[in-house]
Image (cartoon, rainbow, N blue to C red):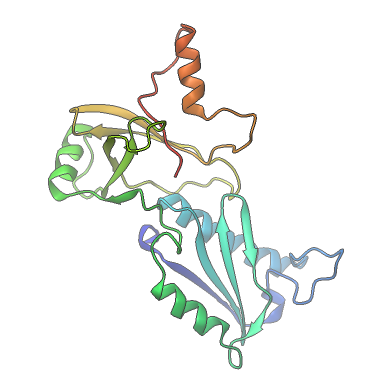
Length: 228
């Protein structure tokens, strides 16, 4: 079940299957240029994409093991950070990684901590309102009602488990779905996206407010917004 994955480990038996060059030069791509290397790169990338798509995550980790050597990889929507290859028989890097991973907070190993499991009562009510199957896993997300206030009231939304889709790894990865605002007893549209973070680019919520203030027609009403 990819929605419950923590760390994906991919095993290959021969160096020819390594997705990355063992000793890349200054002007050489770290990505292997062999057909089998490209196949492995496609496999491990698809697993990372599926995990990021089926969970609310800021990043994920995976391990690529080639015979007696390993690499640790950190993935997010901007790409991947890859360690040099190391012999896990003689080096403690892999052991240390799992030791520290087991001790880490949810935020450190990549979970979006603003999203938590919904209560059974909230989940059942939301499934009924949204006409979802009884097996659909339901989550809860808290969003500040006014991001400009230091200690704001919070809007709690009950949202369905996301479904992994075949998008590229890198990008905004916008996801939308109807969700239930149980405090106000209403259905609203929820949007999750890796936004562009540039000095001269307004946050999307601010853009909606600006358009509304100028009476631009056919613009959705943004109830609230928040950066994780």
